[in-house]
Image 1 (cartoon, one colour):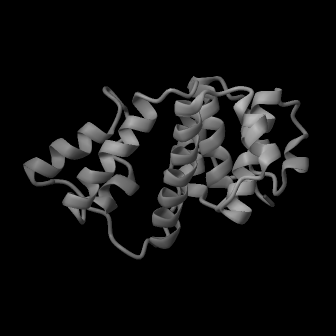
Image 2 (cartoon, one colour):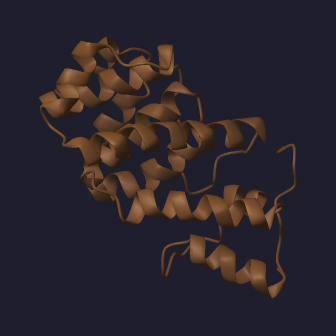
Image 3 (tube, rainbow, N blue to C red):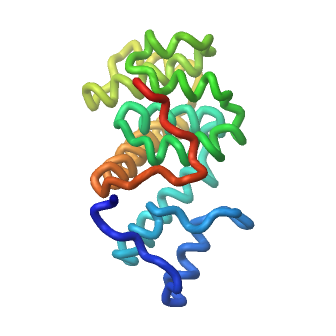
Length: 189
């Protein structure tokens, strides 16, 4: 049971418009519980929309890399809600396989090596883990990223990882239950 009841229809017209703007065009699902919860504070939600939408729809990182970062960040924060939403829709569309998604939920990068990752993806996983554990990147982790990404992409990576930590804090703090259509978070991870 979430700590804060998400909004339910019928929504006031401005919130209805905002909620539908947050969902992909033609999405078969109702607005996400996360979005309906955030709209308990419409001003905050509108400010969050700009960054979230920008990262998902206008980012410089390849979609597969973006979704790998999101999966690893949400897995490391134990955010089954957000991990499951992305694992059900955006991650497969970006090209991540079910085995790769399961591996993102392993506790350490070594355990995530049950999948053969490209050097670029290994660099991303290592960097996410270092940021999660220390809020810093070692020089070797930075250098590994630098071989695959330009300055603009590196900045975006840092913001993306931090943004999904924020999203994980919100979803975990509100005790949001997984969307019924989301992919269940791997048990034992």
